[in-house]
Length: 188
Image (tube, rainbow, N blue to C red):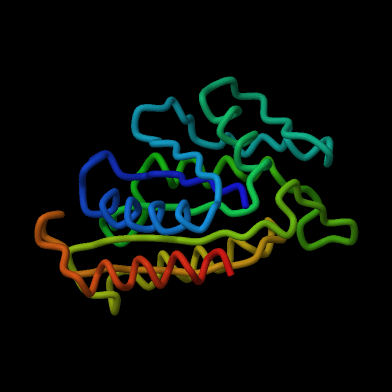
């Protein structure tokens, strides 16, 4: 399986990156191919909602020329995409949110006959970390993620939230067990 990880967090050695490393190590050991893209250092402009991308259903047709195009190409080619982010103010980190907004260019005709998507049937997963609990904190992000699969015509492969994070050194064996179980869930 060709797997793409989209890293929304800025800290390449932070909590989210550490959990993702455990997931990547596990899925790589199962023979899957991984491409990882840290988004923090990319130029990802916000969606203009101009509708230009809706003119052709068979290709990415966004008018903005930035680092988003090659990442969207990688996404279209992937069997599984793992979206990762620390929880920032009850939401995704900015680079990942901007990128997800730009996936608007991957589908046409949503809520209409003939709805098509360049990622139809793709498996998509969400991995997040945060300082607080899931309840009254992270759940709106996961609810929004579940809604994303409808216009994408994708499959929700799995979701993982590791809360009460302080530093990567303090992530315990229970967090690692959850990461490894998540790895098996998203590729099964």
